[in-house]
Structure formats: C-alpha cells, structure tokens
Length: 171
Image 1 (tube, rainbow, N blue to C red):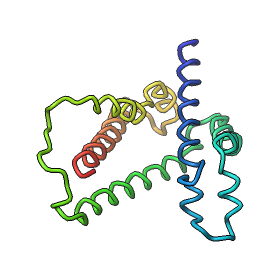
Image 2: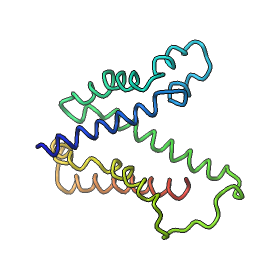
Image 3: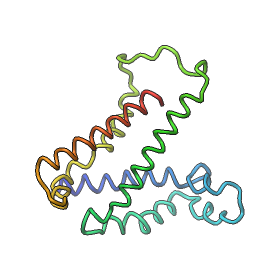
C-alpha cells in the first residue's frame, strides 16, 4: 500500500510539473491559442506564472477527475487522448513529407547506443503506466472474460506501440 501511495503521489507530481511547463509563460498553451488578441489576454495573464497554472489545473481539472469512483466515467478523456494522439501522428507524418529531404539529417544509425535513449525511457514508461489499474479495468468491463480482456490489451498495446514507432521513424 505504501509503495502504491508513493508511486501515485510522485506520478501526480510529475503530471503537475508537465502541466506547469505546458500552460505557463509566454510559450504556454494559452498564449499559443490566444496569440495577441485582446479578447482572451486575461487567460494568458491568468496562466502567466507556473504556481497559478499548476494550482488552477490541479483544483479545476486533476482533483475532480481523480475523485471519480469509477474509471468508466473517464471515457471522454480517453476519447480525447486518442483523437489527440492520431492528430499528432498525422501532423508528424505531414511535416515529414512537407520538409524537403535535403533538410533532414543524413545517416541515421539504428543501433548505435546514445545517451539520449535515457531521455525516452520516462516517456515510454508513462505510455504504458496503466498496469496497476488492470484489475479495476477488468472489473468494470462489460461481459468480461479473460479472452475478451486479453484481446483489448493486445489491441491497445499494439496501437500504442505502432504509434510510438511511427513517431520515432517520421519524427
């Protein structure tokens, strides 16, 4: 129990750090969406500091979503993330073919180990982080059976793996 508590707490801290990075400052999501328009400048000002960004996202988004009793209530967040994943995948492939081939790095080595591989480890770890929720997923599955659950796991892992490989090849 203590291990899961520490793991969950540190996962939440990492999500808050990412939220602070993505939403605060001049390069944050609100500034990118609003641009220089005066009508939504208050949103950019509101998210200007990291502390306020993290506080607002935690209170308005993370706390309510993490308070839900059943995981099936989060279906809309799963749908939104799948749509976002395919949008990003399409964008990466589009940019690959839009960029002149002369601007691309030459001589890509597929097996030479580099220190940069360690920066990808946390990303891959977060991608497949749902393992401790497996009993809960199975419990909430309609007409559950081991074969149906195994098929769902195989499809989802294949989908995630193929998206990661495609982004790695084209991105």
